[in-house]
Image (cartoon, rainbow, N blue to C red; front, side, top):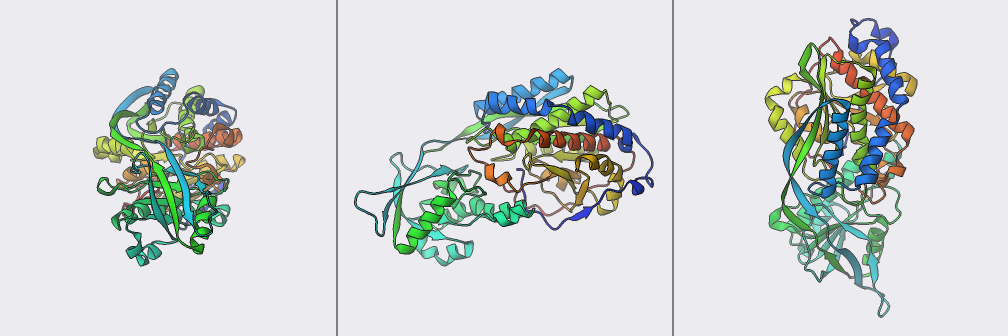
Length: 481
């Protein structure tokens, strides 16, 4: 993910009284929204689909057998519901992890015969060391300004970006901001170090729960300077920093990833056709791929499974939307966004027919409502939806000019209002992009609330009579994965 530095948001409380000023329509019918909510809260369909994806398949990095198996699994499940399924071809990056070890071999005060192992994992797009590894001095920096100040010392060395994830921000509802601040060093740091002649780059892992677990993720490395790059655990970053204060320090680094030719893959698109406005589309989605260290339960099997469960909930109730509801399981969100780009290219001319788009890609924490980029003057239309979500504590609506949610950012720039569940993410980055992102970390009750919120919002958008407006077109900005 989706994914995540947010501006100051306006919180709009739900109000039953304000609902009366808007004309009734199937989308804002309180009884229909309540039935959707209650049906979702009584179902474990999303949990079962998430368990299938994580336990039976496991990791799903683009180009891998796991990613291919997930395409088949989701498509089959949607066909079983009676949805119209399309596999949209997309070429995706195919990066594979190899051997990865790190060892501190020289530092002031090192006892004779002693070295220290560093726990690390290659970052997406990392280049490779020679098979036997490389040994080089380490330079520790804590900011881009410090890197620039030491630019003359970087050539031929390994640069460590020792930038701490701000868990205090995360604990206070600002996990997205904390992630955005730290992930800039993972995205841009290795590239900048390479441009200065570094032979390798290390980044302090981005996340909380420091249990010596590395967090992977994408880099901005380019083919003309694809140096070895890895994330080290917070504990090892702190160790290296302390030892560097004692004197010179050297590391032996072995990273042997490979960047293979692009692979064939697919977005899975499952349509529940509309009735009288079938040419208009409402998207509900999550991304199908995951990093390869774990099974990607929070990131993003939960999001895909919740989107799948929206269709299952409506089919079970025999609710037929006016507009077409389109479930999309996006491919390659994590290290390229090729699936989103492919869909946008195919639908650019049809963007005005996309009424709204939902993506869940911030984990499966407790949801409190929706974030949205609808125009400010249109938020009052959503009062009936907010009221229907209040009994499960998900009635908050937060509006901002742009969500810039990973797979939806291109559609949003084309004017399609985006929606994303407003989630408690205080613990999300404990697991994000780590070996610990497994099924047992997801709360089944929280997942049911996700489905209820997403299903009711999807139904609301697919049936509301009023025009909810178009998103403002923001300046393009980097999306952190």
